[in-house]
Length: 323
Ligand SMILES: Nc1nc2c(c(=O)[nH]1)N[C@H]1C(S)=C(S)[C@@H](COP(=O)(O)O)O[C@H]1N2
Ligand SMILES: [Mo]
Image (cartoon, rainbow, N blue to C red; front, side, top):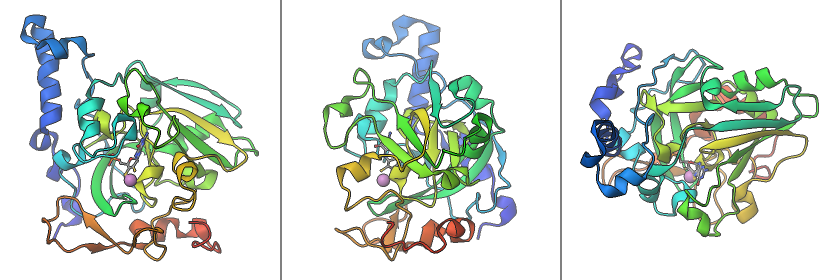
């Protein structure tokens, strides 16, 4: 049994969990500094993935619900089993192809129904709030889940800075679509750029996280570097990676998945064990890293276990209709 005082850094201390890809990236970085003759030809051409894996400490979040007691997924699993379709459809593609993603310089444009629109450089964005450690359960619509110790601050901190007007009812997130860096854009499974959205009150909820790191480190590219959204009570696809634009709008915005398959992926996409996907049950889930083929599935929890914190946002709504 993990006691409250045991939560925090100890079970994912940076020194203990550096996985192969991050370690290798660091070696390349060090090798690059040591002299180009040490670096294999294929690596020399790529940009050094400098900040990936660098320490990014946070302080324990005081936001209610932000520190689940569930055991964290290993960093090796969290960085090698990913959905990031811009880099390919296989779970192993993002770790392989996102390696060379250039995450600096990077900026996020904020536009639409706000009094203070503008463009934030990534370093400016990093300083907008105090970094917090938050351990969230993450549930993919495909039926698997992980527990990830993120580092970031509430998206609401950015939203307050840009002062939404009365016309701002929804927020749309636009993520990077760069053909020169993202081989997955050749596929037309989705329309690019990958877009997602939230109702303004969902975006303002303190659990909605603007994440810059995980496991006490700068985000690995395959997990959405340099900045992504994390909405723990919704299916994983609502949490857009590598964000370049945030738009405040009056009408419910387009989202890539509901555009691709409107009957399968609704705008809300709250984790809900009582509303099945048309092609499979959503009542249970496989926790990545938990046993092998014969491991018991876990029951999926209403709002992914965050009902006490977010249930009020949906009071009176028919969640079968607004799936
Ligand atoms: N830009 C972008 N963001 C994305 C995706 C994607 O394909 N492209 N996949 C989503 C899905 S389906 C999931 S489950 C999560 C996975 O995040 P993780 O790899 O950090 O666990 O990212 C989400 N964000
Ligand atoms: Mo997902």
